[in-house]
Length: 85
Image (cartoon, rainbow, N blue to C red; front, side):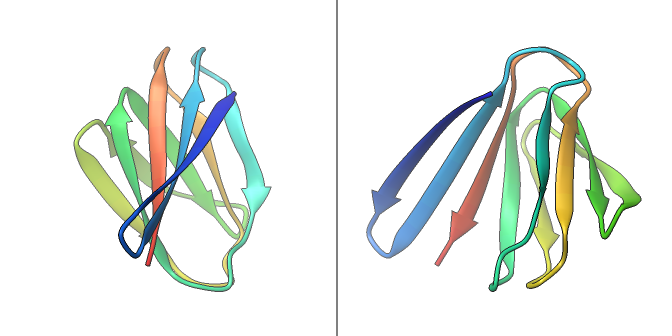
């Protein structure tokens, strides 16, 4: 897992590259809601330990504040970017 952080104006971007299918972003939570954009590949995501869906390249999902969430890559080179205001 390779991570990068960038600021642009009032936005904070946390981008994560999952090199291999099956790689994951470990379960974690944030105090604020945020979208997660899939820039490449696809990932299954879990909220509070339950499967919540799949996000594909070019699409985003909203993660509610305080919810535990995790992403698992379904394809090699899956890129996920969390956006915070």
